[in-house]
Image (tube, rainbow, N blue to C red; front, side):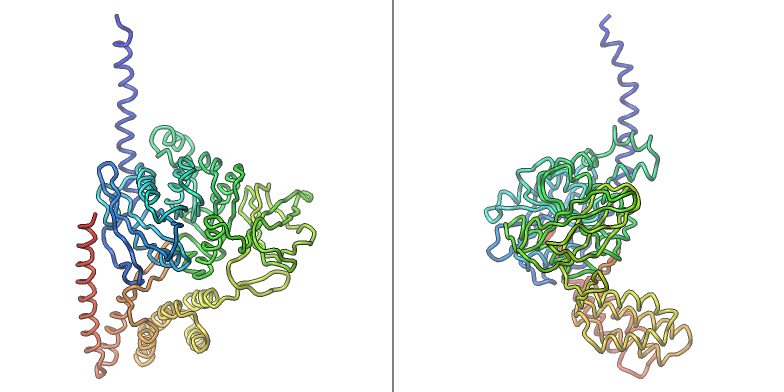
Amino acid sequence: MNPSRRLRPRFWAVILPLILVGCSVRSKLNSAVLFPSPHFQLMPEDFELTYETFAVPVDGARLHTWFFPADNSSATVIVCGGNTDNKQLYLTLAQGLVKAGYNAVLFDYRGFGFSAGEPDLWSLAEDTVAVLHAVRSRPDTARVALMGISLGSVTAVAVAAAAPDDIDALILEGVFNPSREARRRVGGFLAALGQMFFFPSSWNIEASVARLRQPVLFLHGTQDTITPTSGACRIFATSLAAPAPRFLWLAEECGHSPGIAGAYGDAYTSLLQRFLDTYLRGRRDHPFLRAEWAPAGEDAIDVRLSCVVGPTRTERWPAQITVITEEEPKVHRVWFEPAAPPLRLPLSGRPLAVAAMVPAASVEAMGKGWDYSGLYIRSTREWRELVSDASTELQATQERLASFLAGPVHPERRPWFARVFRELARVYEARGDPALAAQMWRRVLELLPDHPFACPLFQDASWELGFDASVLGALEHLVKLEPNGDWQAQAKEWNRRCQERRRALDAWEVTQRTSR
C-alpha cells in the first residue's frame, strides 16, 4: 500500500482543524483590531493643500492614495496610518511635511476610507509595499522615508526590513510588539500558538527591527496606555543591534497617538523635519546625540554624550536622556557640555540601553535642568490644568482663564479653551445661574474660528476633527437662556452653513470614489 495514502487522512485530520481555526482567528482579529471608516469630515482643500489622487492596484482591491507635492522636492514621506478611521487623520501631518519641504503620501489600506476591498491585518504590509513601489516609480521621488503610526509602525518596520534599498529612513510613532501584547493579554501558550500559526508575519517586530539598515527615529508618549512605553523602549534597545543611527524621543505628559502632535504642535513637526533633513537630505546643521554608558555601582550609571551630526559647538545644549531598564524608562532633562565629564544618573533596575535627544523646541533653564518654554506647549499645559479644574474650581478657573487669554496664546490653541468655557457653562446651568451660563456660552463662540469645520483637536488616542457641533451646541443653549436675543437667527444661519458643508463633502466624496 502506498504509504502516502495512509498519511493523507492523518495529515488533513491535523491541518484542517488548524485551517478552520485559523480562518476564525483571522476574522475575529480583523474585527477586534481594525476600525475603518468610509466617511470623511476633512478634505485636503481645508488645509490649502495641492494634491494628486491615484489608485494603487493590489490583489482584489485598489488603494486610494493622495500625493502632496512640495516645491522643488524629490524627497517623499509615506505615512502608514493606524488601525482606525482613515487617512483624513493625517492631513495636518501632511500639511506640516509639505511646509517643511517634503512630498507627503497618505493612503488608505484596503477597506479603509475610499479604498476598495475588506479590512485585513494580513494585507497591511502588502498594501504598504504596493504604495511604496508606486511612489518609487515617480520621477519626482528620489528618496523615501516611511512614517508608521501605532499599528502602522509595525507594518513600516516589516516593510523597511524587507525592502532596505527602497526606504532611506524610518519614523516610528507609538510602536509596539503585537506578540508581546498578546502574551500579556491572553497568556504565553495561546500567544505562542497564534504567532506560530495565525498572526501576520509582520508582527515579529523584534526580529525585523534588529536588522533595519536605515536610520530610525522613535517617538512615544510617556503616558501611553494603549502601546506601553516600556515595550517601545525595549524595541528601541533591540534595534541597536544594527549599526545604523537610532534616536528616541519620549514625549512627556503624552499618551497614545495623536496625543504627541496635539500636545507639542510645532515642536513635533520640527523634530520630524530635523530628522528628515539630516537623513534624507544630508544636512548637518541639526544636532543628534549618541549616548554611551557604563555602570557606576549598583544604583547608578555614567553617561557620556557625543554629537553624531550637527554644528560644532562649545557651549552647552539641552538634552533629554532616557535610561531604559527592565522596569519603566526614566527621563532626565540635562545640559550637555561637549568638554564635560560623563553624567552620573541614578538607576533602578538592570540597564538595557540609553538614548539622548536634543529637544526641537525652545527651552529655559530650571534649576540644574530645563523645561519647555514655547508658546504652544505652555498653552497646552494651561489648557489641561484648566479643563481638569473647570467643574470643581469655578471662580478660580474663570479668573485664571481670563488672565491667561488676556496674554499671548498660540492661535492654534485658542479653540481648545472654548472647551473650558463650555464646561463652566454647563456647571452654571446645573446650578441654576442662567446669566453666567450665557456669558460662558458667548465666550465659547468668541474663541471658535470662523471656519470651524476643519479645526482638528488631537488628544491622547482621541480626536475631534471640527468644532461645528460646538458652535451649534452653544447657539442652542443661548436660544434657551436668552430668548430675546438674535440667537435663533444665528442658529438658523449656522444650520444652513452645516448643510452647505455637507453637500460640498458629499460632492467631493463622489469625485474621490470615482477616481479609485
